[in-house]
Length: 314
Image 1: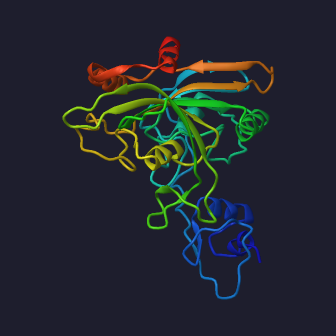
Image 2: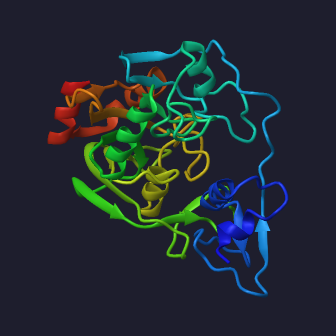
C-alpha cells in the first residue's frame, strides 16, 4: 500500500492526513531514507515513524509585541523580530508568533492547521523581517497560491563570508534532509529532495581583514520556499551566512560576535487577495545587523548599482 496509508495504521497516528504531514516533515524513514507519501511499501521494508510529542496544553493567547506594518480585514504584514518562533513545534509550545496573533484577535485562517493560524509563509526563528499573515481561509489560500505560482516577491538582505565576484547569480540546487543529521538540510540529489532556486545580487563588497576573508552583502530572492533555503544555498557556494550557528563557519571575530544569522526579510510584494492591488513593503535592517555593517564599513569596496538602489529604498 501507499506509504501514507501504511503510516496511518500505526499507533499514535490519528489520520492519513496526519501521516502525510509526518512524511512531508521527514519524520518517516523507509530503510533509513525519506520517501514521498506515494511510495509503495513492499514486503521487507523497515518503516520508522518518529511522532513528535504533543503540546502540553492548548494553544493560548500571549501578549507578545507585534510590529505591524499594515492591517485590514483580510491580512496583516508584520516585521518579525529575531528569536521569535513562528508556530508551535517541539521545544516551543508557547511564546510563538501564533500565540501573539491569538492575543491580537481570535479568528485567523486555518488552512495550514489549527496550530499555524494565519501563517502564509515562515521565517526561521533567528531570521528577522517582513511576514504575511492571513485573517481568513480564503485569503490564506489565495496568498499561498501566489507563493506557489511565484507571484509573491520575497527578498532578503544577507551578509556572507568572502568576496563574491559576479554581480549576480542563480543557485538552482535541490534541498533535502541531511542523511547523517535529520535536523539539517543539505543540497542533495536524493529522491526526497525538492527543487530550490535562489537568485542573488551583490550590493556591497568588503575587503578582508586580519580575522576574516572579507564579506559580501547580497540581496537574495526566493523562487521556492525550502527550509533554511538561503542559508543552505549560500553555504553550498562556499559563502556561508555570517553568524549562522548551524551552517556557518569562522570564529566569533569573523562573525563579528553575531549570535544569529545575518538574514533579514527586507522586501515583500504581493497582490491583495480581495482588491487585486499590488502591495509593496520595505523593512530596514534591525539594530544588531546594522551594527555589523557599521563595523565593516571602513573596509567597503563601494556599493554596486543594485546596492545604491536598495540603500535608497531603505
